[in-house]
Length: 298
Ligand code: GUN
Image (spheres, protein in one colour):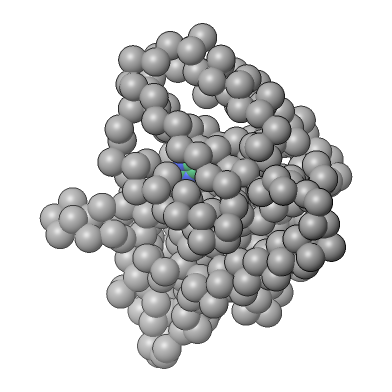
């Protein structure tokens, strides 16, 4: 049987670059910060972001440095707390509680993944909801699920929604398929798409015949963590494809997504690149969440 994708005529898809969207968001934060300083000359506190990293996972190291760099470029106060891999749950709880109590810090981010002896869920629940810039605290996740206003929305899914809006890709009434059910991306992503009136399906490692489902997607969000996992045979012609993956290619060591971009892009109407797509959005949304928390606390 001819596969659906290869039966279509190849054409150039719309490239959903993250940079112009992320830059516009960062510029709007910078402008709001300037206005705040003009209007509140007596307030000397800067928006403060603390990122906590346990161990030395090389990918985390890169992300943490990038987050701190962008925060500094905005003129925010930025701290990185690098803790040794043998840090105990109690030590880490104490670190997070100290950041909760620190008036110079408006956003606390515990970089994942954690070493396996630590429990992420207990630690995430200790960060005050109003400082939880990841939006992973049960209070914030509960508000997200209820369609109410959490202090923060998880950065990557928020970035996907902003990107879709920027490129005027409508979501209402579309069938959105999310591949991956992580707390960081898959679950909140599905929730945001649902709130935007998509019909949402979540697929995961135990879904039989995933391709039969992904081929129904008008909007396909892939967050599975396997380099070049999505092939043309799994894509409906003219789908919008959002690649959340950031992986090292096992042979070339280059950064690649979960989507086989070269193979898939001729068959979709729009697609995000990796790098240069959702990764930039995640960082910009983190700054947005930090800024929002600062404003709510001042
Ligand atoms: N590791 C990969 N993505 C994320 C994220 O969005 N937040 C945190 N805390 N860790 C991550």
